[in-house]
Length: 98
Image (tube, rainbow, N blue to C red):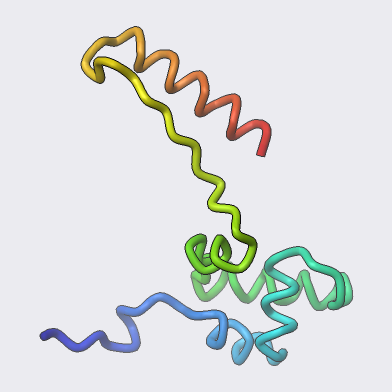
């Protein structure tokens, strides 16, 4: 089994908090847009997150919120271009709606 080096692994929320000089809870609230941290702190945490390449873990967020933000689309024939157009249109509408 290959060991993951520090340079290879993705930054965690703990890494973000340490780099930003805030608690893990403050970093979490800042990244989730929840109240608590000041606007200045949120800006600082988001900037550090961008700098270190931190990306919110969607799976972890969905466990907490109980919302996956996934949509299933069933089509009778995946190779039929007609259905591809419909799925792409649905994807754009859903993305625009957040």
